[in-house]
Each structure stands twice: as C-alpha cells, then as structure tokens.
Length: 188
Image 1 (cartoon, rainbow, N blue to C red):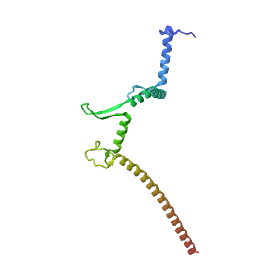
Image 2 (cartoon, helix red, strand yellow; image 1 turned 45 degrees about the vertical axis):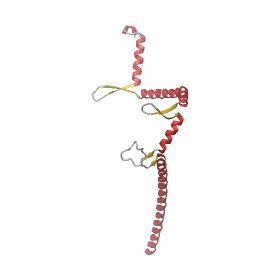
Image 3 (spheres, rainbow, N blue to C red; image 1 turned 120 degrees about the vertical axis):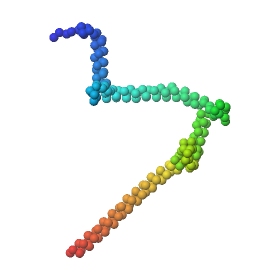
C-alpha cells in the first residue's frame, strides 16, 4: 500500500489538521436534523448546551467575585458620602439635605404609613374607586395575622373532624355489635 503525501491533495498538513479538528468539533457540538421540508437544520448538541451553561455559570461567578472585591467598596463609599436634596421642578432646593441612609429610612417610614385600600394599593395606583382602608403597615399586619389565624382554624377544624369521625365510627361499631348480638340471641 502506498501513501500519498497530503500536499499532493492540494492542502498543507496544517490545513488538513485544521479541517479535521473543525469537523470533529462541529460533529461534537451540533446535530443535524431534517425538517418537514427536507432542509437540514443544525442545532446545538447536548454537549454544546452543557458547555455553554458551565461557561456562563463560571463567568457569572467570576463577575460576582470581581464586583464584590472591587466594586462593592467603591459603591459603599459613594453611598456613605451621598447627600440627597429635594428640588422643585425648576431645580430650587426644598427641605434639608439628607444622607442616603436618612433618605432610605424616610422612604421606608412613608411607605409604611401611606394610606392604602383594602387590596393594599395606594391612591396613586387605584385612584378611580379608591377607598381608604388604613396605613399600609396595618394592612400588612392584618393580612399576615389573617393568614395565620385562618391556617390555625383550618388545623383545628380538621382535627375536630377527625375526632368526630372517630367517635361516629366507634358508635356505629358498638351499635352494630349490639344488633349482631341480638340477632344471634333471637336465632337460637
């Protein structure tokens, strides 16, 4: 058997290796399907999908690590130094300047005491048929308590039902036993 040098085929050994690697990678990373029209459709293989997911996970982890190490200190420093000032629509200052922490605390307080309707919506969200229920914190507490009270009542009712079923079952058994005894006595 004689061998033909690759160069005799019109390509260099480097080009041949590139084509073999390219073909192998294509076969490993994609699969070819025929659609209803008979056209070939190339889709990513399961291996390609797993590789992509793993790469994206590692990139996300690395970005999070870098952000935590390099960006977090800068952001925290800027937030500590940040002073906010309310202005009118013309840019005139209104009220006193606030640090970022003071601003967040004030916003949280305003959020908790803002009047809401029975669905927890502020007048801004539902101005047409809005009727005040009370402050949002009261609404949230009532909703939370109602949920816990309702689940406690459901547990009590379920337990009571089980107790009643057991009592009725015992009563029926006792009555059946008495009937059976009386039937046996009568048949003798």
